[in-house]
Structure formats: structure tokens, C-alpha cells
Image 1 (cartoon, helix red, strand yellow):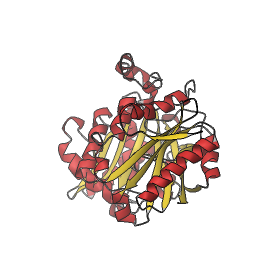
Image 2 (cartoon, one colour; image 1 turned 45 degrees about the vertical axis):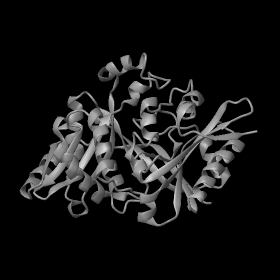
Image 3 (spheres, one colour; image 1 turned 90 degrees about the horizontal axis):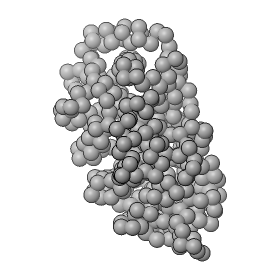
Image 4 (cartoon, rainbow, N blue to C red; image 1 turned 45 degrees about the horizontal axis):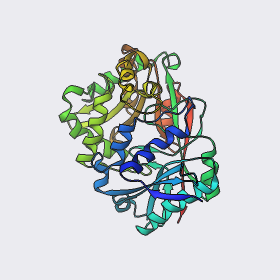
Length: 374
């Protein structure tokens, strides 16, 4: 018999966070955020997302009182106000390869969402569209990069057998210095010179004194993503929370903006791939010994994650995106970081796909979102 228990606090929350580490013990390709990061994500005290949303966390026990699965259900009022689609979300889905367990978890999430008035369940969304999305459906042979999900192959069959249908595919593209076009920097110099004549300059964000940039970046972030499938605009507090987290872990030259007299009109954000460090902390615990691995981060990390690039609609097709990529590459080469992944790229984002193809990038992972009427 499978028993489902809500797990939003106390020991149950610790079991919820700990379960994937147990499930994937011994799998060299599984990496997850540190447990402290997960707790911050999942609790209202640590995450301003919960000012306009609520999540119920559930864990499944078998007859031996052993945790065999987990799931989150999220009712997002801002999403509903924008899209008016009566959609709630499931996420943080992890499960043993057992359809009965998966069905029980998904039924529980669906029931909770129905109680909130939602008519469709979509996901995985972990916890919001500004965090991570989907299950891995191709590219199981290598570990994920920083903050990207990982799961076993059987998850797709569990979700489909429950009646969830694929809704959206997203991709990770791998870039490496050896595959970049030879004319990349020369072309970027030409484009930057042309942009300068139009009053547009590209510069790094000063991470030690980013206060002014953070406020102006929020407008560019929301405006450049408006109309993107599932996008959730961030208010001042939510954006500042996200920006402060990124600022703490990015290195100089890894966050760039394009600007003119009107403000920031484009940006690119990258961070070191800290999952290369977390891979050496398999239980996700920073203490008592994990912190020693973090101190060696500079020696361990060899690649980056490009988290997001955006250009305001009025300034697209001017070469700003090419210049941002080129300057980002040059800055990371100076840091000794010669490869990385750009993720996510949605299946319908033809301009971004063309740009990455031109940069010699290759698709290395595929993620899928699912949905079902409930």
C-alpha cells in the first residue's frame, strides 16, 4: 500500500529534499543543488515567489515506511492572472520505476490543484518557470549543468502512462571554443562599431556595485521575454532575489548588458558550472566536509552555464546578440573557461536556434513539459 504525506516542513521536508540523493545514489550523472539551496527554494521565508503562489509538497511511502517518490503541486496566482488558463503545475517529481507510485503521486497533486480551482495540470515546473522546467527526455549520458534537472529514462513513460501528453520541448546547446566560427571576434568588432554609432554600448555589470543595474535589468528582462510561452514576469522583490543569487556566484565579465541613453536594451547572464563541484558532494551536504570542495571550485570548474540572453524587440536583428556572445566568450576564455551550455532554448525559438547554429553549438539535451486536463 502506498501512503502519501504532505511534506512542507520539519522532518518531512528534509525527507522530501533528501529523496533524490537516495534514489540516484551511485549514478555519476545525477547532480542536484545543495540541500541548503533546495530548502531556500521550497520555503516561503527563503523564496518571495510564495508571496503570490502556494505549493504543497508530498512524499510517498511504501509498506516498509521507505520514501519511494515525491512531487510538488503549485497554484500560481500571477500565472493565472496573466494567462487565465486555469492551469496549475506539478514539479520536483522523482519516483522509483513503479507506475502505481507515480499514479498515486500525480493523483495527489492533481487533487490538490483541483481543490484550488485549477482545471489543467502542467509540468514539471520546479517551482516556477523562472527556476527549472521539464524532465530530461534525451541526453542521459552526461551530467546536467548548474541548476538543470536530471532524471532516469523511465520518467517519460511514467508520465505518459498516467495520461500526461507532451506540451513543449526545450533544449540545451553545448558550445566550445574549438567550434566557434573563426570570424566570430572580427564580426563582433565590426558590429560593435556599428552599434556605437547608434549610441549602443556593451559592457560588463560591476558585480560588486550592481544596485543600479539590477533595477534597470528587471525592465529589460520582463520586456524581452513578454509573449514567451509560460513566461512569468518578476516584480521588484522577486527579480532582486534572483539577481542577488546570481550576483553572488557569477565571476567578473560573466554578466553583460547592452545599453543606450534609454537604458538597458539587452543582456546575457552566465555563471560557472558549480555542478562540477557539487558532483564531488554526492549527498548534497555542505557541512561538515562539502565546504572544502567549494574552496577548490576554481580548480574544478572548466565550463559555464549561459542562463539567459534577451534583447528588447525594437533592437533585435542589429547584431546585439552576436556581440554579447562574443564578448562573453572572450571574458570566459580569460577565466580559463572554454565551454558551456546555453539552456533553455524552446523548440519554437527559431532566431535563437539560428544564432546557436551559427556559433557551432550542438544540441546535447532535450527536456519535455507535459500537461493534462484534471
